Image (cartoon, rainbow, N blue to C red; front, side, top):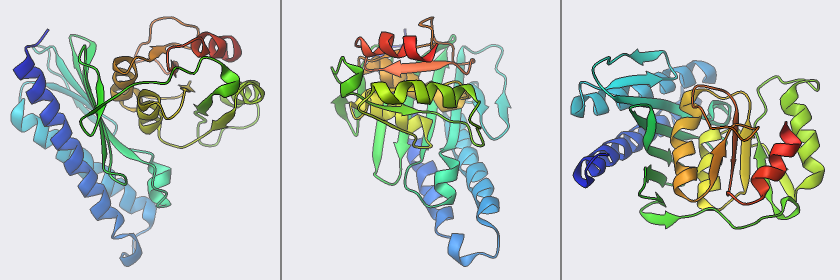
Amino acid sequence: MLDADSNAKLLETAENAARRAGDILEDWAGRFTVSEKQPSDLVTEADVASQKSIYEQIRSVYPDHGFLGEEGLSVEAPNSPFRWIIDPLDGTSNYVHRFPFYAVSIALEIDGVLSVGVIFDPNRDEMFSAVIGKGATMNGTRIKSTDVSQLREAMVVASLPIGATGDHEAVRQLLRVMPEVQTVQRTGSAALNLSYVAAGRIEAFWSISLKPWDMAAGALLVTEAGGRVSKQNGEVFDVERPDLLTSNGTAIHEQLQRLLT
C-alpha cells in the first residue's frame, strides 16, 4: 500500500493527463468540418495524439513504469510493479458522429491490482476518479452507486459489438434482459457506462467483448463507489478477460447473472 502523498501524486498525474488528452480530442474534433480528410482518418490521428500525450506526460513523471494502450502502446517494465492502462478515446463511433458521449480512460495497476483510475468526459467536464480504498469522486465530490434492488426498477446498459447479428450472444443476452428491467440502453462508451454505475446514474452494465483499457479505470470506480464488479457468472473479475458484469452491488447483480449466463 502506497502512502497518501504517493497516491495523491499518482492520481494528480492521471487526472492532468486525462484532462490534457480531452483537450486534444476536442481540438481535433474542431477540424472535422474544415479538413479534406475523412472523419475516420482524423479520428485515428486524434486517438494517436491523445495517447501520445498521455504517455509522455505520465512517463515524464514515472519513467520506470510500464504501459498498455489501445493504439499499439506496450511498454514492458519487468522491474516495476506499476502498469498504466490507457484508452485515449473510448467511444470512437460516437466521436466520429459528434455524438457527445466519449471519454478518456486511464488506470494504474500496482502488482496486478487496479489501484488508481480516472475517466474524463470532455463534453461535460466531468472527471471521475478513484484510488483503491479511498472511494470514488466526480469533480472532487464523493459518488456512490444506487440502492435499487429490483430489476423492474433499474436502468441498465448493454454492450453490443459493432456489427453483431441477431445470433450473437450479446444480442441474445440483451433480449433476455429487456423484458425484466425498467429500461435498457446502449451508449457506445464502456468507460462512461462504468462511471455512471459508480455515480448512481444507472444500475448495471455488462459486456462480453471489451479490452483491458475499456474496463480498467471504470471497474475500480464501481467498486470504490460501493458497487460490484465480477465475471458474468459471479467469479472474480479479470481485466484481461472480456467477461464483465457491473452493478450497484444489490440483488440486481445476482438477478442479472441468472439472465446473462
